Image 1 (cartoon, helix red, strand yellow):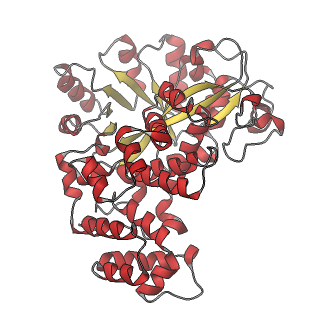
Image 2: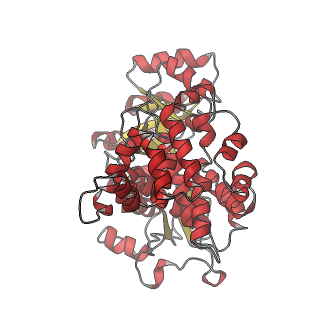
Image 3: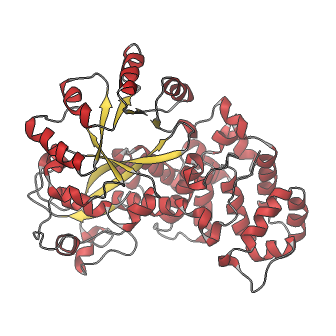
Length: 473
């Protein structure tokens, strides 16, 4: 979810569908890849080339004016890319060069948060030397089944393979000649689970596992599909099954979760310090986390906080509320929070909503707070199961927030639709939402997604969110 502007009349039409040489913005969305334990282990990066809107239509200023990155969006001037990112490069970078420059920005590194990125590469990109600027240890190159395979391509892949670049055969439904020729150089194979024949699936997975290939199941949006692939020995899983409400999600509803829910209900009523103190004292685990939060470096009050009342005063109700909201999504396993897919998804969505609403006219702190709540509670049914509407009522959320979550109504509903589309890589849906969210643009949506993902990935290490350690059930 990063964006970088390029104006390159020589870039190949196959990569973008554009032949007019007009400026465009290369945007990335990311989709989570999970391991067999249901923890994050990577992200697929989906590229989109969006038209750059004219400057007189309220668009975000291009970085061309000062040949610098725009402070809010990280848009990078193409002349800078060509002359600074790679000394001696031509004034007009190739498409691959531009995409690589976007991948190398610090914002993308933060959004991946230590996990590898899976990137689709075309034949043209594979032959472009600029691709070798990508760190081999940080990215996996995905090859589509319709790529033109000949001796020259195989030779190029052999060279890249020798330089420790890793390849995944993507969107496999039926093994074909391309599959057979490239399989020896592939570390993994990504199976399109919704489209593959269920009769072929067990046999193909057995053969690939015996060949030592990493098996990735794509399109996993239901718990049943995850369990099918898990039983067949798949190693990784791409999709949003973990964010859906199902019976297994009820394992999250334990005493600590109910304690968090009670605390949220109290916080919604503007409680006194004495009321908060009384509620927290009923839950020693919450007290422990709050004390850690209050004594974090970013909240230091000049001395060590030793009492619960001091901790409440030092932390503040707003920060306690956000900390509690995110803790709802921690499932009790002792793993790093940045590896928890549901917590990361909720935190990213909430932060995106907060940042995006502030780009709209006349939005202030109250609107930003409502937007954050809309994002963070849009997945609450995956935590508690049952009716989303009933859970939202229990949380005593305002009617506009409930309308946004349940029916995508109002500005908050449009923003929620936009971030949902970004998660799916549904660029047409993002454009449709942005048509009603002026001056917000598609490239800004992608870039705010990047910023939000970076924030979510380090939330448990930041001063604002210290204390997000896991609560054991």
